[in-house]
Amino acid sequence: MPSLFILAGALALEAVLGYPEALFRRVRHPVVWMGGLIARLERRLNREAGTNKARRLGGLLAQLLLLLAVVVPALLLQILLLRLLPFWLAVTLLALLAASLPAQRSLHDHVRAVARGLEGRGLEGGREAVSQIVGRDPAALDEAGVVRAAIESLAENFSDGVVAPAFWCGAAGLPGIAGYKAANTADSMIGHRTPRYADYGWAAARFDDLVNLPASRLSALWLILAALLTPGASARGALCAVRRDARRHRSPNAGWPEAAMAGALGLRLAGPRVYGGVRVEDHWMGDGRAEAGPPDLRRALGLYRRACAVQFAAVLALAALALAAG
Image (cartoon, rainbow, N blue to C red; front, side, top):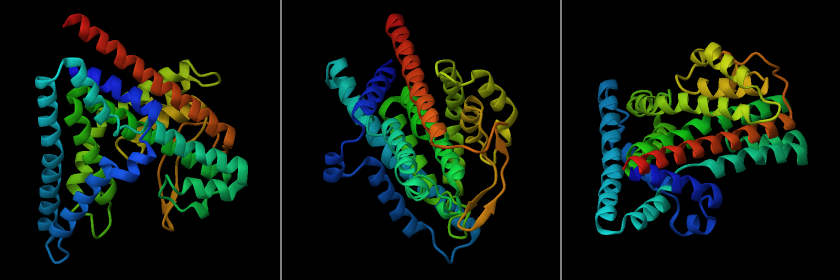
């Protein structure tokens, strides 16, 4: 039961406050601390002269050490606060700590910056803003490509930046959300199919796929329900796109929220993309139009806000049921 109240408080605080810039300047962000540990482990354990098997084992050891370093202190702190302080005071403090880890507000602000860039400075403004949130070559994108890239990032990061942290916080409180963010950060840093990380990052990539699996499906559900509340969006279209296209995406998880977003907005997302000059083939999500503009990005942001609200309402309902049962 404490986990659901911690989650509700964390989501509300992050949506209203985000992560204050003054706090970031003073103590940085927990993800930055995690990233520093991941980098130190990589320097020690990812030896270029090692065999493929040795590098894979080194990556597995790094993943275990990272999770222990993050989850154990968070678990001990949660137990300590819940035992020593009045329940609601302990929950409030834990919610304050957990609020640094979801990305509802920052994701919205980064994607909105793309819309503002396109509206204020045209294609170059959009390319500059979208380069902050996607890995593909912005110079290869026209206006429709910039918009699609931003919407795809919004959909995918809704799953792994908002829903997945919420899921694991609801399941295990502060250690759950901290452990998830450590795993997700490791995947973003070393879970790449490059010569340096193909073996060393294997454990990080596979574990990230596993822990994101429930949230990817849940994020599609939240988007479908949000489409019911969004003027001009189609819940039926979102559901049909998920059923038809989600499993065809090259990622085992990204296809679910991307298909739901595409179907709800009547767009086509994903498809062939260019990363570092290399064309990556992928299936299209949705069967709508590929030509998209800034108004479509604004519509996507509206759908995203409602999906966050749907998730928050579900958390409150579960917390109320837990309180009534307990």
